[in-house]
Length: 95
Image (tube, rainbow, N blue to C red):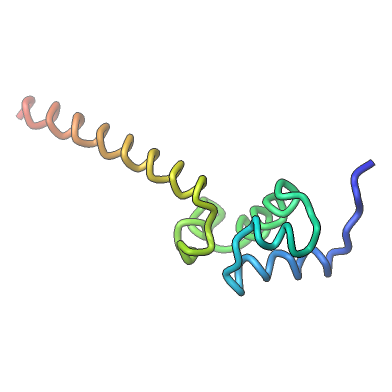
């Protein structure tokens, strides 16, 4: 059965990540919670900030983000850039 945490405890963990800038791994160890649970709590709070389209994640302090997530985002941006280069070349030929 999953362990139940109070809303106050969850908020304290999320604040440690978002406000204090600690890494998720560090906070998970410090508060003895699973990394996946902490990730869900942080994502839920980030989803309520801004427009809800992920803008909060992109505007967050880069030092507080998980390196895996940062690498994933870099790969996504590189793929978008390649697509845009190809699209620009295609439309330039058509003119």
